[in-house]
Every structure is written in C-alpha cells, then in structure tokens.
Image (cartoon, rainbow, N blue to C red):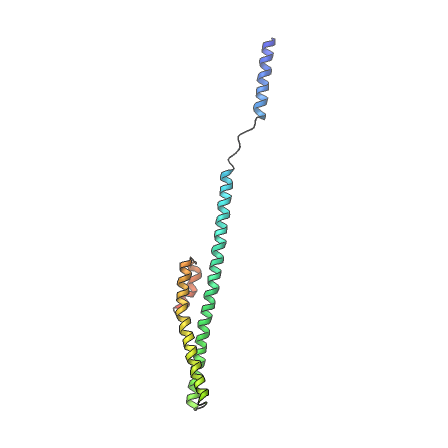
Amino acid sequence: MTRAALLLLALLLAAAANADTAPKPAKPAAPAKASDAAKAEAASQAQIAAQRDADWAAQLKAMQSKRDDARVRVAAAEAALTSARHRHYPRGEALGDLENDLAQAREDLSDASERFPEMIEEARTAGVSAKVLAPFEEAAGE
C-alpha cells in the first residue's frame, strides 16, 4: 500500500476507535426520578390520609362511648328514682340528689347526642373516608 493509503487507513481506524470510546448521550434519568418522587408523594399522602382517618375514628369512638355511657347513666338514674319514689325511700335531700343525678345524666346525653352527628359532619368535611364514617353514621341514627 502506498503511504497515503496507509495514512488514510490509520485515520479511519483511529476514528472508529474513538467512536466506540466516545461518551454516549446520557439516558433521561429525570423522568425516572420524577416518577419515584411522585410515588413517594403519593405514599406520603396515603399515610397522611390514613393517620387523619385514624385520628378522627378515635375521636368519634370517644364521643360514641361518651354518649353510650350517658345513656346507661340515664337508665340507672331513672331506675333509682323510680324505685325511690315507689318505696318512698330515700326522702328529702337524698331524693333530691337522685333527681339531680338524673337531670345531669339527661343533660350529658342530650349534649353528646347533639355533638356526635356534628363531629361526623366535621370528619366528612375534613376528608375522612366514607368507609371509616359508615359505622359511626349508623350509630348516630340510633
């Protein structure tokens, strides 16, 4: 081969070698990271929603228990007062205490019965899931 042909061949081989080792364009990593960030954000939102639902469920359960306890106290106070009036014992101040206990129990029951549906509506407004609210809505209707 001639010197010019050899030189041309060397240049072509060098160019081919450089083409193999040349840096390749980077793959678009941003969309993958963006999707990971979106997944992390969605998971975070799900955790926040689950915690909110759990907090509201605990508050609603406490109010339901308060209302149920007031119902039991009203029933017990009514029974005690009915028994006292039937037996004519106790009298005077002790009978007045039974009447006061009944009045306080009825007031507590009224307050709890009014507040319970209001709390359910507050929870609904706060975004609590219907699945969490369903048992409390059923109990509020009782």
